[in-house]
Image (cartoon, rainbow over all chains, first blue to last red; front, side):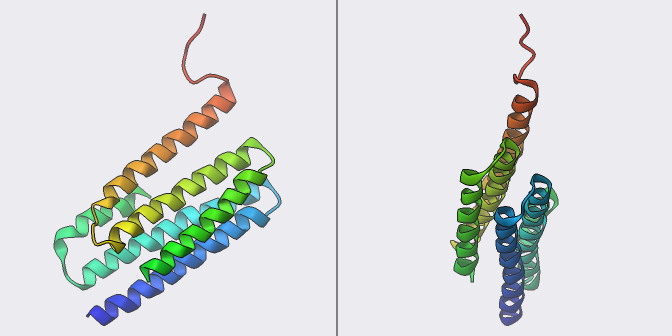
Length: 78
Length: 88
């Protein structure tokens, strides 16, 4: 189960990191204000959603239910 | 794994700082500062799980609230010219 936790953590971290870096590159390279709002929205949704969903899944997989409410607050805040 | 994600947060923070420095209008800078706050929130949460102390999520939530309120305050100041109803 720890191996599955590591694999899912890696997948979610990879997608979240790629979303953050692509959004930052778009924030530099896009020409208009409204296009940059698109890039910033990509960072806001993709980055925070994938990083905090990773925490939910890993804690759910090791079946430690004591801290799961703690992370759902952080996930629903966004 | 946590370290790679933190390095990704640092790289994107540097790119957003370049946009803050080069920004043409005020809206570019406000948008980039809001996005930098989001990156810092992700970094605080990652640091909390990297060092084994998930209590840092509270600090991340408070930082996100302050980030949102600060962005709304700066936009209201830019739009209306003042923050309150002080009329003489």
